[in-house]
Image (cartoon, rainbow, N blue to C red; front, side, top):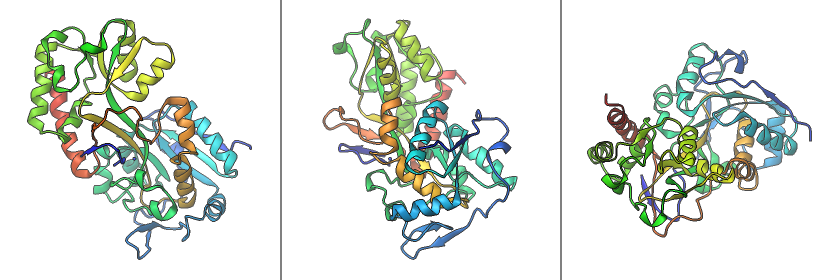
Length: 366
């Protein structure tokens, strides 16, 4: 979906028991016996489906903390750097001691498969997971995602309540990064369409996994996206480099001059002294990570308390902003009138997924 600025995102002692697993490892170590029904929920009568066991007045943080402390545990899955999350968990436990956090490293795109595998084995789901609307359809089809968590009633600010049932965890615009030793900013394109330019031959690196070009379907149509990518491949012959870290390392070394990249990754490299900068191209594709609750969670009060604190501007967001340049506020330097595009609904996600397959086929020649 396309929007124009201002942007509303569609976003003491440490008691942490870290069971850090790489994605794809055996899933048994992150859960505990005693699965609950995946359909447990309570109708509040207000149009929201309240997770079973969540206190009625969840906007009362003292009462919510008391209920969360009585549960004593929070199970969370996410794809972030474990060292970063340890800092976040430590800050949470300093403010809300007595809640043990069990953490597993699971990339957002692998959450549905992992969660459904756990469900089929009779294991309870995590209380929270980091996800993206692009990958949620299998959970929706299996009724394994709570789509109507009462975020607003519990005190989350409206601007980060997503249409897909999550809370925006971070807003990550895609930008065009460039090597400042090799490129004059005045010579850079201003739109994604302008990347199809023979004058750029030999200067560009792209990720073969399809993004951010797949997101352009939300502002255009699939055939136009395929035509653009095909034109770039034929006219520019970009270097194919998978992974943001590898791509930006390549850019900083001067092996290539330009590369689409996520803005927080660019800022992290700048902070380390890399000779790179960025420009926004129109429209501005946005990748958002969200905080989601599966259906049938065991610790709803701990989950709600952590989600509210983690997504609060003066809570977890202040920490993530400091350690990895990610937060859920709109970037302050967007060009006037910038059009932001992001997947906000299952229909958006389907369009992006279908475009992604076509884009990947162009890059890989399959």
